Image (cartoon, rainbow, N blue to C red):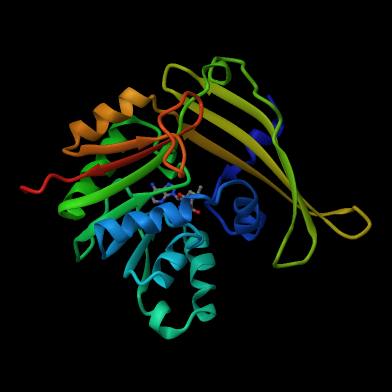
Length: 271
Ligand SMILES: C[S@@+](CC[C@H](N)C(=O)[O-])C[C@H]1O[C@@H](n2cnc3c(N)ncnc32)[C@H](O)[C@@H]1O
């Protein structure tokens, strides 16, 4: 095991390089969800609640599309990154957005919503079936009857989930918009536990000056739980939802192995 596991901090738990480059990295790898999630809001109506709202990558465009949005996230560093964008928008848009710190497994807000979404696999940060259920039950309580829930997780590729399976090394270099310097992010090790359906990844981020010298280094640990398609379907049902649709991407492709799971569910109309 790499010795850096001992010093790595949980992903998103503190401000740093990984948050500074978050939007740039995501733009390169995962951004098709925004227009899909806004289309869902047009069907379901507002107000809208985003759980695990991060840097406001989706919440801000949602507000630009005319919806009142509450973004809830556990980590103050992510909320600060979302709030830092507020001055980019006219007050008619920025007045529609509120960010609150909270845990998606146990929150109590003073309003109900027509639409709740949890995107970019954030639901997978919940590492036990109990935590997943607590989250879905909280969502149920905050939805109006007939209200909609969209949840995205990845569909597990079994060859990458076995004990000892490493998967292809992941590496990306992007420019840090805060400092203007290049940041290389790479995964060093991955540990799978097929029994609990969890994986842990050790990430190293290095910021380099123009000469290629490392000027800042961070080690982050990312823990996720994978959920199988039928497990997810039963979980939604168990927590009182009706599944309206299931896709394998945000272009509404049919379910497919080892792609994404994009679930559209509804709280039944009778409370
Ligand atoms: C991959 S990021 C996604 C951010 C945003 N939804 C997006 O699509 O860009 C995962 C987010 O989940 C948040 N998170 C993790 N566990 C959480 C929890 N229990 N409650 C609320 N937020 C959580 C992290 O702080 C982080 O902002």
